[in-house]
Length: 243
Image 1 (tube, rainbow, N blue to C red):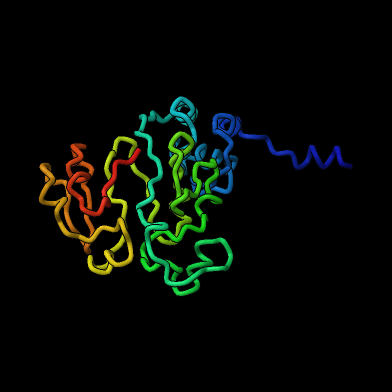
Image 2: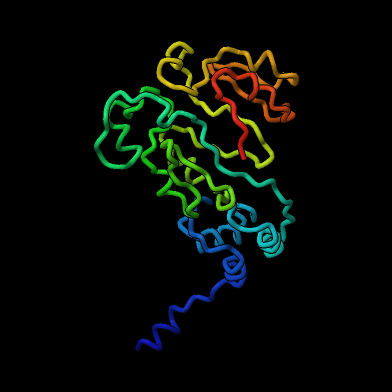
């Protein structure tokens, strides 16, 4: 009976899906939007996802996947996660949190214990979510990204309830490590390194790469030449070299 059933209901595996699955790294991180690598392989084979959807796969693997589905793939610049906050222990807390070590849970109580409602609250949800073990919490209670391990999958970006984790191209060297849109006076009172929107960096930048928006300096990475003058001039050390 079992032999009959196995023959009756046997489904031939799609060799294209099998080939793609063999090329994927098997991280099952879900960053592609699929439940796992098998589902991802199926959708690539059907043309529902591009061959380079998996950020964990090396370019040689992506290129081979492209050949499987007849699509030419060009190599993209590597992206890694960056934390847009310099606060941590340098930012005041409004109260002592003694609940579950989870950022979303902590935010259920008055939007988290930090005086800055935009900053990292440091309960490590990104650490636990990272499928590659690329994030740790440093001594300053901020996430530390190991760029050698980071695959740019964006799982940490999607899990961060504060929206302060983002991806940057590996060639981008300077970032404003602050996300606060509060007025400068308040930022000065609560955080040692928060951007106060003073505009000194805007005036100092020889490439007109920096603007102010909502009390926060923003760097246009297309215009930035990497001279580092903004880092020297920033009175708050809110602009840092990254990577």
